Length: 168
Image: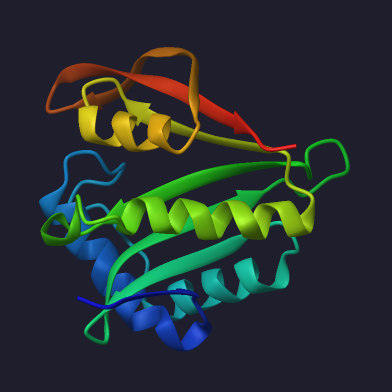
């Protein structure tokens, strides 16, 4: 299996939207439920363009056999006081998990972050997402705290860890 990690461009909008819909269906660890994603193709294209236009944001895709198997988004701060900080979202199709794609995405992201002056990387993860937590810790993230009753999934309260990594 050959995995290509690359910055996503507006022409990737359909592939990214399809990936997001699939992740919404197959993973209970993503924020949106399967019927909640309201973005259309044009909105995804505009989102990719906004990431491209920002000096502190990036979308990185993991491509396998010509299709997206995963992605990592980094949304950096937009004002002087928080431009050094960025929030991360990652999603990888189940069939490609455990194959190093997540680690690769984080390595690409960190190399990019260092070049643009990002110092703080942060994310949230459901406390029962053991595989995700293991990946984040492996990549140098630490738990900073817990967001209690952060989400309501199927009528049940779910806590999230707030995790970060300082890279400079």
